[in-house]
Image (tube, rainbow, N blue to C red; front, side, top):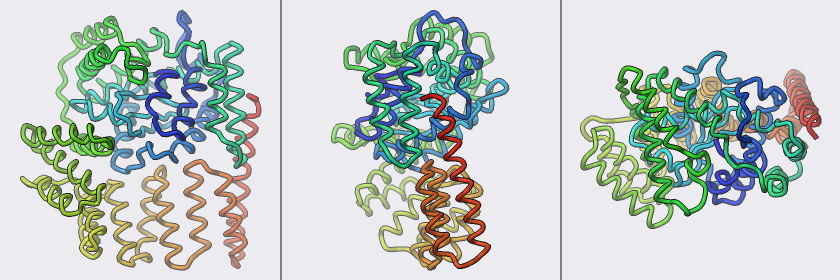
Length: 501
């Protein structure tokens, strides 16, 4: 999707603005595409290999995850990534070169964006403004369309002096990060300010239409209602007109919507049979949670309260339950335990329940000093929803609070294998080992955590500490292999980036 203005506008916090907005000034501006270039698709990104694209994406996300506007929530991330991968599974062969990972940032503006390496960011405002799951899926599908056609890779490797300066500067900043020194965010952002000034800020009209076409086909084949794309684009066009002159940052301002694009989508809808999609329950609960998460100022809080009241009055059973859940979550974040418990009880009226409700109930009981009942609730929830990360993480929290660290170790190991892209389990495993006095294993688990978040130098340091603490020959040998492997990866990543300096 878009370029410089969008990356800056959606990120109020300084660190993530400087890091992911580095994509704005650097990568984002570079994946802006000049008008009139006819060739599109995979061949156009031939110079930027999937391996380098993955390295860039990992380095960007390593920095971005540290910012408070990044929403590190298991319910949100599991739902959004599952949505993205469901859409990607319906993509034309061979599909994305990297697994799709969708994450959320706390910002009320309606926006989404793609980064190198298969990462897609979604503003909380996009989710809460959607009226159904197909509308949300339509924007995610559009972003996957950009990834599938390698528009980012193509923009970064344009045959121009600016393009080569851009990727060289990005590579230099990432090399500093791989060395465990330097400031990736400021390095890329400083370059962008110099190199991106007069660059076109958005994808070309042709690229946007191609992403619409590919996204539309994925949306339909994945079982969503294609009308969701027309409805969302129409809503975004109206919002753009209402906010004209208010500055960049919205979806419409960063990849211009047009009557022609909307008409193309409507014409395609008329050519296919009607689709009736049933929204998943998780869509409603995640939407309610994100509404609570983004409502930090008094105006948004009043809007949130009014919205939840209307949903409780007029919504379906699951929408009413989700609205009560949203109120409970908002009260829990304010440490208003009594209000949170009352709202959760209301969320379970009419026999409605969900993993989101149960995991919040576990955390609420822990906070209220009811660790034993929280543990019992967690065990029941896990037996019912063994595929939910939020429930699993709440279960581990309850285990730690009740002293079940020995029992927690095999449970967490199994969950880390079940969800290898969720680093939080490795962090909690380290905590269990630390509680049990197993300091070598605690450092090994934390090293795994840092590998998964992309901080390889820190992982090497922890493994080296574990090696010096261990007296067991076989453990030392295993650690030697791990350290060598990570050092070799650091070396190959550096060599990969050195080619672009």
